[in-house]
Amino acid sequence: MRGNAIERHSTVDLAYGSSSLSRARDSKSKKFIRRIVIRLMHWRRHGRVVVLFFLLLGFFWLLLGRTYPYRDLDLDRPASASRERLRGTPRSAAGLPAARVNALRASYLQLLKQDNACISLAQTQQPNAQTEWQLHDLEVQNQSADLDTWNELHGDEPPVQTIWQRVDIKELKHAVANLPTNAWTRIGQERTNAVFLGRAVHMNHSKPGVESIHLIMSDNAAHNVYVFPWWWDENVSPFRKLVMRVLCEVMAPLGYGANTERHLLRVQLARMAPRSAINMHQDSGRWAEDAHRLHVPLIVPKEANGDGHYYFEVRIPNNSKSMKKGKSMVNAYLRNITVDEGLVFELNNVLAHRLSVGKDERVHLLVDFLENPLPPKHIVVLDRAQRCMYGKKDKLSFSRKQYGVDCSRNYTMVDEVKYELTTKDVTPQEVMDIIYGDEAESHMKQLIHDAPELFELSQ
Ligand SMILES: *[C@@H]1O[C@H](CO)[C@@H](O)[C@H](O)[C@H]1NC(C)=O
Ligand SMILES: *[C@@H]1O[C@H](CO)[C@@H](O)[C@H](O)[C@H]1NC(C)=O
Ligand SMILES: *[C@@H]1O[C@H](CO)[C@@H](O)[C@H](O)[C@H]1NC(C)=O
Ligand SMILES: *[C@@H]1O[C@H](CO)[C@@H](O)[C@H](O)[C@H]1NC(C)=O
Ligand SMILES: *[C@@H]1O[C@H](CO)[C@@H](O)[C@H](O)[C@H]1NC(C)=O
Image (cartoon, rainbow, N blue to C red):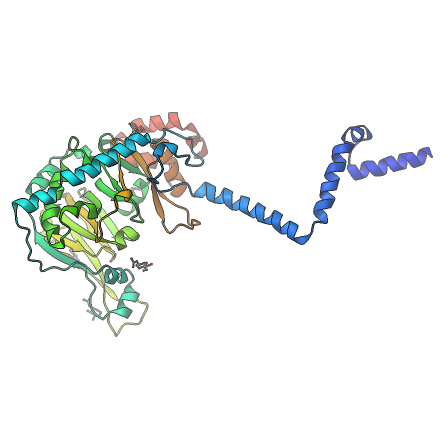
């Protein structure tokens, strides 16, 4: 009998894998667990499917949550109500208070109504009604993005460069030429203008030595338009008046009249420092497809007219019947376009193009404009020293937008470096060098202080 009892005990112990002492204590919970395991094993098929579904849902939620941190600023929701945060980075300074966001927008919309450069111009001088140029047909232009498609659909040359007219740029050029050199740097911009973070390493790669001052920018999807302080605030920059004086004149034949400013999707001053280059690239994304790209050359190297190092080459499809299909690179040729100070032209920027300058700098005013005026709802007015993130959304994203702008928070240097490190193969030191140039060292100290974990990881 004793032997039987021992045998029974050891059988039970084996089954439960525990001593008889703890068995006495745990037997209740063990029974419970066993009941659940048995339930699960006998669960009907659809029960398992439900469990599997929730597991998968959780998996994707984690995956997307980690890699889909950016969104466009939703204007219908006050910024302060935002619960969004960049996952994986500490939450930093909150965005602007909703009252400030709304006040900025209201005063800009007021400015559009009252201080309208194009109305006053129309009152003082007759716009030049004689137009010999025609706007590029955007649908046709878009087809030239792909050389094979173009060569199959069309026999002739796509629109490349359309010269509009010569315009008086004296004042604008003077203002640009007199900017202090550091006005073009991050440090020069971040105090009085707003800045978009998250693009520095990419820009250094594709356009080394190119600096820009943003006046109006859009997101990649041309959904929202961001109006920068250097545009709306006369106290920090004269550019809105000077630029609009030029644009009202050259765009007058389009008939946009008092609405001209509301057609602007992007307005930026782009400087190529001496001996810099823009590598061969095609502009893509809705902002490039939906808008006309206007160049107003302001400072053009003397050698542009000779044969120095300056060039501005566009790759043009060559529909040669003697060539085999699919040989796009062969079925195209390069051509230098005409560039002269004050000579305004429309460029087909979906064609591949590249630029280079020699010993002299080059500055152009770049304007992208839409055929329809922007609804005020999509105008976001940025505050002085506001720092937004222009971020790449993950490829898993089911959004049609590849990139988003998030201005709902005031992003920090740490956020920016972390973002660059997750999207590009660079070290914190390289990122700081690209962003801050000569002043990288002091910012590096700050970064080490604010985010020591970055340096532990990168060892
Ligand atoms: C431009 O062409 C691309 C394909 O090359 C297409 O996906 C896109 O929808 C087109 N955009 C417009 C505005 O027609
Ligand atoms: C930035 O651009 C310069 C010039 O092309 C290049 O030498 C440097 O390696 C780039 N930095 C990074 C981190 O890509
Ligand atoms: C463009 O101009 C540059 C400088 O004058 C020259 O070296 C280059 O060959 C030109 N390109 C073409 C395609 O003619
Ligand atoms: C276009 O291609 C044909 C055939 O290769 C060539 O003969 C012609 O010179 C090319 N046109 C230009 C402008 O390069
Ligand atoms: C955003 O943060 C920076 C410091 O990172 C600060 O200098 C700036 O004033 C802030 N801007 C706004 C609009 O709060």
